[in-house]
Image (cartoon, rainbow, N blue to C red; front, side):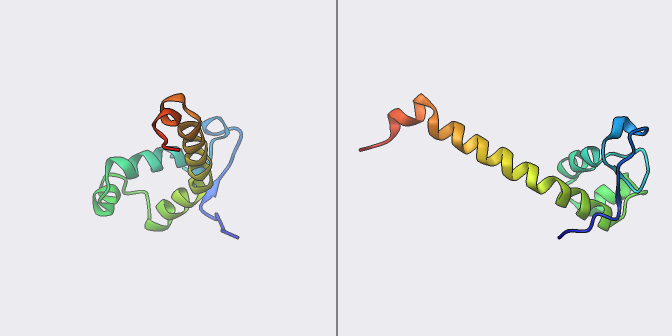
Length: 89
């Protein structure tokens, strides 16, 4: 079981969204920043309050959500009329 000791949930902060170490920096924002700055050195330079473990835990927290979304997308593509017509018997 993954430990998320750097992720905090507070209903009175950031509308209850998961945040990094109680800061007003949401997990969602960290994940978005990872996509904007694929080089971790650039990411940490632009977000000096972040530590590598913060980023790792934010991505680990989102992993099950991505897996579910990917599964739904594949199912939708498989069941699409356009995809079905391309299948060969």
